[in-house]
Structure formats: structure tokens, C-alpha cells
Amino acid sequence: MVNFKVPVGISNRHIHLSQENTDVLFGAGYTLTKMKDLSQPGQFACEETVTIIGPKGTISGVRILGPTRKEAQLELSATDTFKVGIKPPVRDSGKLEGTPGIEIEGPKGCVQIDHGVIIAARHIHMTPDDAAKYSLKDGDHVRVSVPGLRGGVFEHVLVRVNASYALDMHIDTDEGNAFSIVNGQQLEVLLD
Amino acid sequence: MVNFKVPVGISNRHIHLSQENTDVLFGAGYTLTKMKDLSQPGQFACEETVTIIGPKGTISGVRILGPTRKEAQLELSATDTFKVGIKPPVRDSGKLEGTPGIEIEGPKGCVQIDHGVIIAARHIHMTPDDAAKYSLKDGDHVRVSVPGLRGGVFEHVLVRVNASYALDMHIDTDEGNAFSIVNGQQLEVLLD
Image (cartoon, rainbow over all chains, first blue to last red; front, side, top):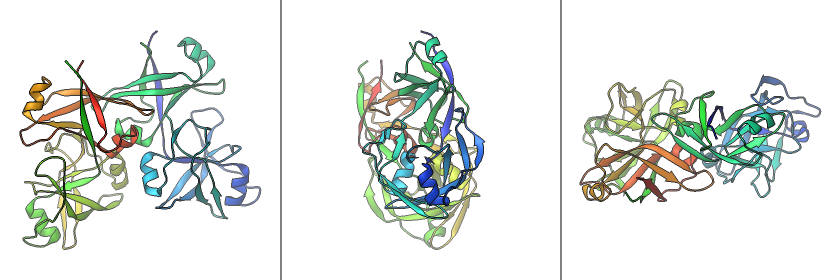
């Protein structure tokens, strides 16, 4: 098989909320305000941010990503988790069983979630057409090469396939910083 | 050649000072206080810390490592550099030409260094005996494999050989966090 390139997006800490959470944090019936579209179609960064309050520290200005989901999901870097004092697992988005919760503070109220905090596992979004082209399927894992002085290889990168996706690899700030990666850089997926 | 294991130490941000710096920051003739020995013989963490003041932010509690050197060297993670607002290069220890400076604040005074801030390049310390055993020499670069869900390969890991060293790999907190590495973990050096 032939290797191929993917653009990489570096995800800073962020949170997905339910409408119920949004009502408590920002006021009943509140609608989140789109600030900018993200690489994945339909997903957007909101003007609104929240503060997260852990047993050892707080982080303010945590960006909300829309649209709202059925339940809250807070994605932190490992660096962040030391600051707030919780130990979430490395997980794929949406796999929240057994994950720790945290207190979330908005301008109108606070929400204590009892689960939903993860360190997001690195992954590549692609369409079924992309997947077919590269002989990959949803749930596969691939290796991705990073060039440069601080280069190396990311192993176990999850492939996520959905017609609503656009081709994009997502890593967190620790992974970006460790390998001196810049947003939008093209990385090589190793299929051989 | 046969692969071999090295223990890894995760270096948090820290600073090396000259005696002249120490005099200004802590008072004339001040002697740094050893808190604990480090893995490299003769090197130690000090009780004393300083605050670093960059154009965009400050970080307090930056640990001093002793003994004093001929000039200051501040080692930050890339994550730290965004917080303080400077852009140091990834460098081997001691190679400080063209690096940015920063303001350092101690209990008795401040020092503005005009160079000396780096993001430390990952490296492995070893003795000449170790180097001979693995057919390596000072200045070589090797690949190091990291196991686990967030595993992968670090490429371009510098080999540093000196009779005063102990076998130990040094990475920074971004690299440790990106790959879920714990202090003291054994990693495999790939020679094949």
C-alpha cells in the first residue's frame, strides 16, 4: 500500500456540552454562539468559554465546541490534568464509561459532571471514499511519521470513518509540542 | 546490533545559574542548598527556585539545578514557552549561541540574561563503557521505542558519552505527557 499525507490539527483543551448543561451554565434556553467553523463539517468553536475546577487547580477560558451533544465531554492534555489534579484515561471520543468528572463553572451557574473527562486518543478523521482509497476501515490503527529534529513516529493512531468527516488528524497540545508540530502541517501515514 | 533498555527521566522546567547570577538573585556569596541528588553523578536539585518573567507571562517556582555553571541555562518545555511568550530553539545542553534571554527574579534581585533559554533536545547519557558495549559514540543519534496505547518512536535521540555520566535518557514534560511515559520507565533503544 502507498503511504499518504494528512493535515494535522492540534486540539487545545476544550469541552462539549449538552443543552441541559448549557441551560445551567449560561441560562435557560441559551444558544451557543458560533465563533468559527472547525475542520470537521458542522463542528464549530463557540465564543463562550467555561472554567473547570478540579481538586488541585482551576483552568479558565476552556473553549466550548458546538453543536451540543447528548452529554458533556471535557478533553484535556496530560499537562492540564496535573494542574487540575485528576487522572482521566486516554480514550476515544464518546467512550466515557468509568471516566472521572469535574466541576464546570459558567456565568450563570455550575455543573458537576460525574464522568466525561478524557485525554483524547490521537486519531484521523476520513470519509468512506478516503478509507476505500487507502484500504482502511473504521477502527483501524495506523502509524504516522513526523519529520524534523524532534521527529518520530506516532503508533496506534485510530482511524475514524464517517461520511460527515473531512480528512484530518487530531492530536493534543502535548503531542504537538513534543514533536514541534505546527497546525496544518502534513504528516505521512505509514501503511507499509 | 542488539537493542538495549535505558531508564528515562522526565525533566520539568529548570535553570542552571552561574555563581555571579546566584550572588545577584540570592545575595553576595550565597551557596545553593542541595535538596536531592539527580541521576547524573554530581548534579543536584536545589531547595531554591526563581521566577522567570517573559513578555507574555511569568512562571514561579522554577527549580535551580546545581552545581553552578559558567553561564545561565534555562530549560523550558514548548508548553512553557507559549506561556512566557518566547521562542527558544530545540538545542543540546550548552549550545546557547543565538538563543533568547529572559528576566530571572530571586528573593534579593533580578538578572536579565541576554541568551541561554532552550528547549532541551532529548538525549541519552552514558559512560564510555556503555558506549563501547553498544558500539555507539558521543554525538551519535539513535531511535527509542515507547510501548503502550500512546506509544511510538522518538527519532534523533542524541547520545552523550562521558566518564562522569550514568546511563539515563532525558526527555521533557511535553514528551513524557505525549507518550504517557512515567519517570524511571525502561525504554528500548533501537539499534537495528
